[in-house]
Image (tube, rainbow, N blue to C red):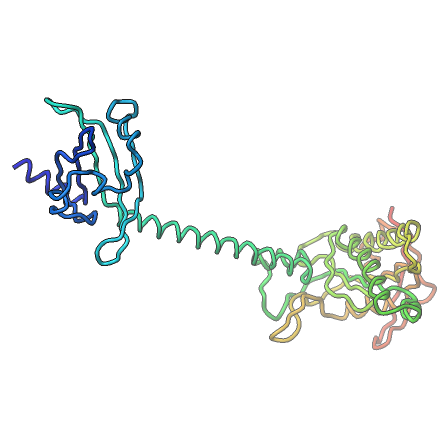
Length: 358
């Protein structure tokens, strides 16, 4: 009864065992040998263990070390064979010393068919490799997306999009902002003397100076227009001191231009920005067509800021009345002798020239 149960257990476990002597002859066997490409006839035709397990050929010294107790055991894992129908299967071999109650010490060789487990492991390994490749591709895609967002979308706007604080759809919200325009003076006439490549190089240098000043004070560059830049403060993040931030940005911009002129070694003409700043209500959000959006500000306050900028000479920072009323306690400024009449505006606008901050 116990022998039958033992055979059933070996069959269910796809296992078998061999007992061999010092001459590597099979003394006893039992189990599901069909799982290993063997049959009972093979076991009766030959007693040489190497006929059944050719993987042990050349392992005589190891077998004797296990038999003599010099090694506790010996294992071979994931050996692959091909059965009669050209299918690959896998097996593990474990070799242990065995001392029967009577007689010489023998070697117990346990064989286990691990095809199902090995294939599961191979599938899992392949899935992990595929997942690793997907993660690598995703990381590359994220890096490329970050590069695109960093260089084509204002930083704070891209953060707002990723954090879902800004909805990627047409439209916007009514908000008070301070708008800054900075335009390189005499750039058009100067560029006539240079090649297109040299003109682009000059633009890179000066627009970078302007952008740095705007970002340092918390503003967002929303547009480059040839040799001019447009920035807003108090969007997309709220900034209670947005008007003063814009004035500081203008001052830093002019300072950076002066520092560049003093240290530059390239044959590039020295130029300054004319800066115009105005505060007021605008619609702030995504403007454009269905296939292409631009985060920007729309409103009369933007137009006024642009008109003020057009009157600023090289190195000057001009602000409108709304901005001046907010920051007048923190800056030094002188008003124009007469209000300015801007094209398209029914009322005159008082403009102030910023001399510095207190």
